[in-house]
Image 1 (tube, rainbow, N blue to C red):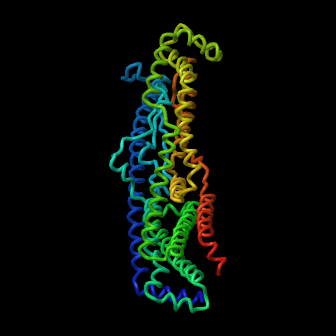
Image 2: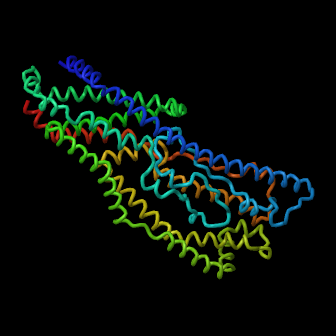
Image 3: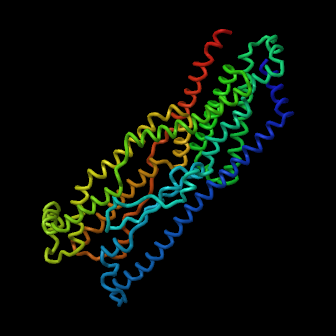
Length: 469
């Protein structure tokens, strides 16, 4: 019976041009979305290339000057700009901390349109006060980006609804349902077989189109087969979820117009209302402290430290006797006092920063806890995770910049206190920033989650009908 249904359904879809319409629609949507995503990644790479080129030019000039100084040749540069001074290197020649895009970054814009992908932490200034956000078009922020994640999460369900909303009710309205009842198969079994056939056709078109479009626009994505396979599997799971919802509505309502309205209502609830509600609840329960207020309090602490620089300097040297032994206390200047007070400042402002980060973390934990009420949230987080553009990735990038900044300062500050000059050899041994994706990939758990949610919905609403057969 299944083979007969398969043959009949295939012929029916071919004659109605549904397969052709679906194929053209999906390929067009995927191609345009991938093109947009690829353009965003190219802009990101272009920005990184420009700052990297500028840094290389400055380094070339700096190395040429250092070579002259080491050869005791005359250089036409003011003393306070000489690259042989460690603090000149730390202040005027900071290193770049670059967050390179992943192979599948074109998949989901995520937070990449709000946060920067490169920073140059200097020895001067408060690293914890660095701004990692970028100025963006508020209209674009409101409407979002048309990327593959948007097509998969928002548009594919609408195509599934149009493809399946009247599968049972159409037979009833055409008067062929009684003929089907005379067949040696129950109506629900017949509907499940028909849904399974359409699901296989729809998923095949989606996966094939996705692979073709990725191959055309970003062949490098195939270098990460693990994530690519996970992407295909979670898309198949998400499609199955919506086919399950459509099947339940077909059985429970069995009226074409009502089916369509009910499915659109479910779509609005799952992809729009629930994510927005959970996000609003998180912001209301755990509001983040004012960043402006935090920066003002940091400035007050800095002003207090300036009045106690001599006292702070003495305490700093007691805590770092290796620096005090090799330093001439009479020659301590601005930079020596600055680094001594900076350590005190970081300790005093730590509670402020902890409160700010804690509230953000609570918001993210709330969303992570309640994301299972909406497969759309699970999908968005999974696709952002695969693309390397999630909130967690940018927070971790920020932490890595802090860690690198500490290593950068710890490399130069001892040279300052010991009165050591910076050389070409020191340049070659400087710390280098290498971004590492340290966020766990939970896509396999999310795939299982979507399957479980779909299965629960099916058995809760259709289980009794199956037992009654």
